[in-house]
Length: 114
Image (cartoon, rainbow, N blue to C red; front, side, top):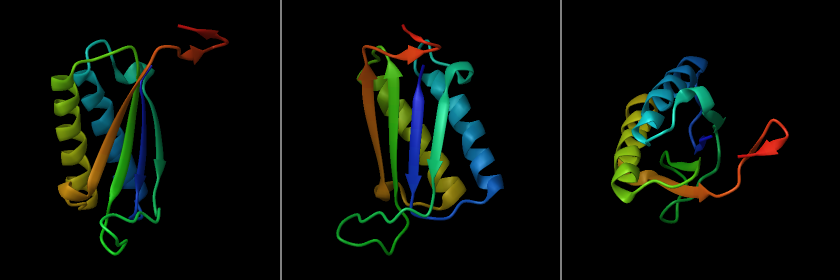
């Protein structure tokens, strides 16, 4: 039950979006017990993102939400993977990418909570 929400300041082509979707689908398996089978992704491109006082350079804000918990080393690996994906696919500098993690105790699906 992971969800990755990605906001980027640049416009994405359909090809870029599909490539990022596929790579995030692989990367989620870095978190034990998580897989693309349960992964939900959202993308917002063309966002106005001010970082360090300006919005002239490409930037990204990514939120990774999971049901349950994981340890910090796993999140470090996931941050490295997300940063690599966005910098290669969208040419966003690694120092202009924020990644936030949220561990959720209650997650609903199909009319019930896990």
